[in-house]
Image (cartoon, rainbow, N blue to C red; front, side):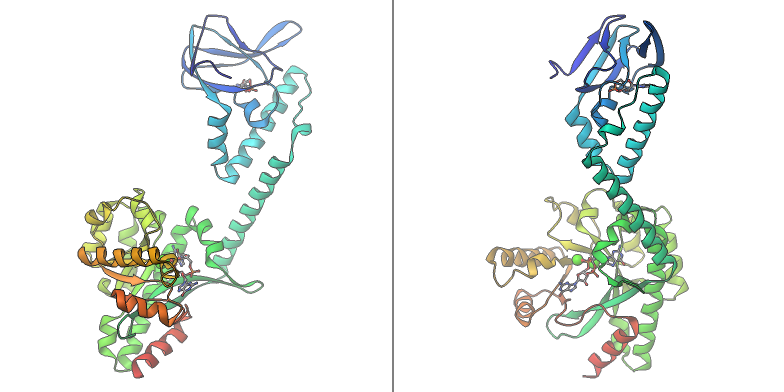
Length: 403
Ligand code: C2E
Ligand code: CMP
Ligand code: CA
Ligand code: CA
């Protein structure tokens, strides 16, 4: 237990000794701390630590006794870091970072015990939680490498799901969705790997590859429609592409986006950049970049609307063109009057701000009818079509217009 958040030490005052149990770490605000061990009644220095450095953390992380002693070389001001304060940060870190830390700590203890001649007790305390965590880190790296290999082996594909005018059920666009078709495991659910791609640097090459695929395919869809004498549809048809925070933040994003678009000779008015409400709000998306995209003619669509954060202020600041009502509300619309009220309010809000609305995840004719009643502009969902490969999608678009 710590009496206060701060501790002052006199010169030569011993803070703790090697072998004692550790209950907190310290950050030095002022003065120097000597880390040392005693051998044959002699003090052997390990390190001198100064302002801003942390110490006493090892025993908290690996649950062992103090690996060395600490005493003040000057008058010192120290700030306590409790076990909880430290562990909540460590627990929130990436599994690989945690693995790295354990390994470094173990090596440090081994080195210290070589110097001191004391046996390191690292082995005996490698308990199950750490082992579980090591296994998790291994699984994570295995999956990351597997995903990387899959990308290099062309196992990634883009499928397209139709977006329809609510009133007429006329197809007017599509959302591009990433698919991993493994030769050994078959179709792998996007939710199980997209976060790993998005949280690693892989998202940049994969993201630009997605844009290449999408814009090339958009051109194919438009060309096929024109060949099929569906010129009006070719003119109205637009494609929504999901963009993650890291992609959007890449300093070269707009240049690359424009380069790929020009290469495939498609018009930005036919492209919607779809970003989740979460990244729009957490400061990830720079307003300036968003404004540039909008000025270049791209549509800006907010995905999963209603699931993010509470402030709606950003809606007035950002150049948004579309709101996507999240499936979690749509699926409850018939059974939960509150969910229906939320959808109604979202649509009302969007209309007041001059945004168009797309209701996601429509699975039943009843849900479709609700969207008609509530006047959502567009609908998307399994009731109309699932995400399908380009060729099949083109046939669907042609057939839809013929019928
Ligand atoms: P999302 O952007 O919200 O995409 C909609 C998801 O809902 C898709 O899942 C789609 O297949 C599914 N869906 C559409 N209609 C229905 C329906 O009626 N019922 C049900 N149960 N589901 C429906 P999918 O393709 O598995 O994608 C999951 C998430 O992965 C996406 O959610 C998106 O956040 C991310 N994602 C997919 N493709 C990409 C991509 O190319 N780039 C990025 N950055 N993220 C992507
Ligand atoms: P802990 O084992 O809790 O208590 C002693 C602290 O001294 C330890 O945490 C580290 O913060 C620090 N320490 C141990 N060995 C070294 C070293 N070789 N160099 C610098 N600091 C050390
Ligand atoms: Ca989406
Ligand atoms: Ca969505």
